[in-house]
Amino acid sequence: MIENILIAFSSIKIVNLVDLAIIATFIYMALVWFKKARARFVLIGLFILGSIYILAQFFNLYLTTRVFQTFFAIFLIVIVIIFQDEFRSFFERVALWSLLRKKRHLTSFSQNIDIFANALADLSRSKVGALIVVKGNDPLDRHIEGGVPLHGTLSQTMLETIFTPHAPSHDGAVIVEEGFITKFGVHLPLSMNIQKVGHFGTRHAAALGISERTDAICLVVSEEQGTISIAEGDKIKPVDDIGTLRLRLEDFYRKRFAPRRKMWKDLLTGHILEKIVAIFLACVLWIIFGQRQEILRRDFVVPIEYRNLAPEWIIGEPKPKEASVSLSGNASVFELANSSDFKISLDMSDVRQGDNEFVLTDEFVRRPSELSVVSIDPRKIELNIYKFIEREVAVEVVTVGRISYGYELKDIKVEPEKVKLLCPSTMKPDEIKVTTEEIDLRKFTETQVITPKIFLPKGSRFANDKYPDVKVTVDIEKR
Image (cartoon, rainbow, N blue to C red; front, side):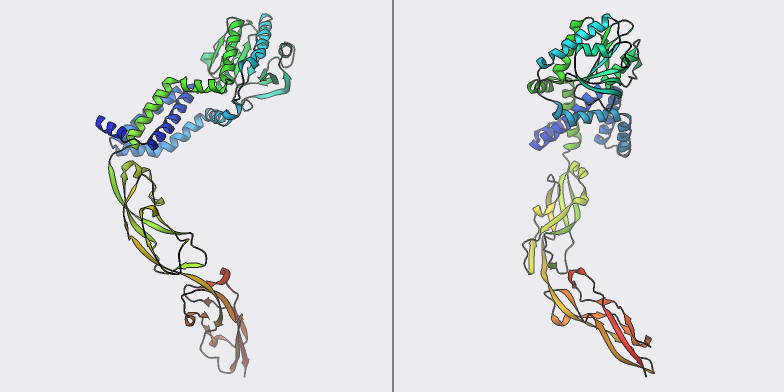
């Protein structure tokens, strides 16, 4: 087994490194997301099930592998339903990341920090309850309800006025975004984590609820004890003094609105354990699924498609419609490939009238680049290609039988007398005939107008593909 692993890594290519990097990135993002989404138990369950599936694949346990493959789609749907809010939040962050990650320095927020510190200190001394949500990068609108739009400049007086005990907005939350109070009297979602809310009240449960769902930080003043608490992520903790509050706010602004170079530094140095685990798991998956050394050879009957043939050209029969192709490659490539996509594609843009010979080479075979062509049968095909020519041909009325005794056939007229056809240029003039279906004259005892079926020469068609309305008048007169 170790020897196979060494062989796998010795044959690694640049495309394999790109493949590994993409999978490792997805695994890393999933690990970080599960960690922040409070779904570690799900991660453990996924890890156990994934390990069983990998082992089943490795040891060729057919029944176990088939069961896992059958229920995999259902399992994914269940995960999406259970964690739909977390998935929505994740994709919102990905979509808005480049728009909201602006280059702003901590100094631009120092005034906000002073306002928060002074206002909360006064509210704490007066034991006035308060709930302030400082928006990060994540959108809040989906998680909040009610509130009165304000868009007023952030100030200590404004905050203390809003949270005056007798004010209607006293029990709601204030939303602060980049130095502005955008809403007040807002209702926040409550946290369901009873263990962390503990002895705190509804105001603290609301602070923890919004911080669990977004990257905002929430500042809470207890109405009963006058303590100041900070909710961030899935944690809520009281602060000992105003100095600690300032440090936490500075850290919040630094993380959310750091300059680009700081952002890239955090990206490279943060979550080291998750990065190591992601790279390790990506390598394991690549060894098991992506780098099987068993080389297979399989035969396929694939269709032949004729591309870029001008509308006026036609391919004469017999026209080959398929060919046998032998392919070789790794077993894993055959498993991932869809054989219905295999085909031989011929470019007909440079054909000439008459006989054309095509040698079927490897580049004509559409298949995954990891599969090589061993043989093609037939290697050569000959096609007779010709153009359509527009001709005006008379319509011949075909009759059978004779008019009944006592009646006389005066005339048979057809309208139109001629129709326009598109005929192959190789067709001889005496082969070009347009006839009606047989008209039995024995059935006529009076003049009638009928619309019979029209028969064309093989390989021809009506101009503009429009079937003409041909009418035949059988003029009968009684003796």
